[in-house]
Image (cartoon, rainbow, N blue to C red):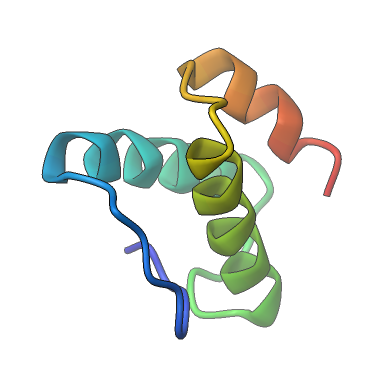
Length: 67
């Protein structure tokens, strides 16, 4: 589940699903609780990166590694 508070994003359902899939992969690989503050920060970062133009799935994964 993609968790973030107060973020408005003009992202369509297909794009949101891509972000969700990446989020799910990352929290699983990091053994992170989906409802943790760390996961919320990750979700917000993924959305922000996507909105800034980084829309390639692998690029999003790599950029998220800098968290």
